[in-house]
Image 1: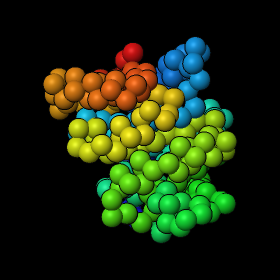
Image 2 (image 1 turned 120 degrees about the vertical axis):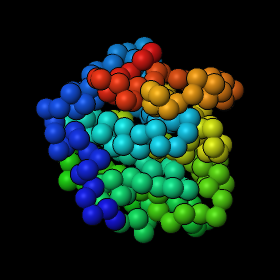
Image 3 (image 1 turned 90 degrees about the vertical axis):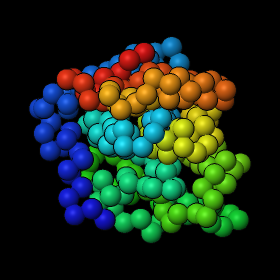
Length: 220
């Protein structure tokens, strides 16, 4: 558990900052994106590591919740999970717990984080083969159960170019946001990531631009 989880949550520690305002703009843009097609389950991915994906997930979740949008963050990174660290939560039970037995538990092990309208489903104990969990037949059922309990479900996943986990989930959600770190994300990586998403017929709704003066920004 992180000794100071609020370090990553600028939307809580400095709500008047330009970055916090950019998250509010991002929420508004997502609302416009969902006018034509519902956007209730959103996967947030990056091409590689250290691009700010998980921090964006957490701050976007806080911003949505503050708008009275019931929000759930699901840590689907069953290799290097961090959402429980960001929010300062225990990780003994979580997403992987729903796949431990032949019959899934009736209650989702969601955790309160002290922010109204926001809950987190941490990763839980790490499985031997994460792709077996995320690619299982039960995963779409879990997504459906989560959707019944929230207005927006955000999924934090491993980098697209490293492992197949993100693509396994991408076709089961309403949309995908790519996190692009200016000066770090390579153009070729971004092109290949878009191709992988297209192959599974995922709906790419835009990109969050990190490390720009008004970060994060949604580009359609």
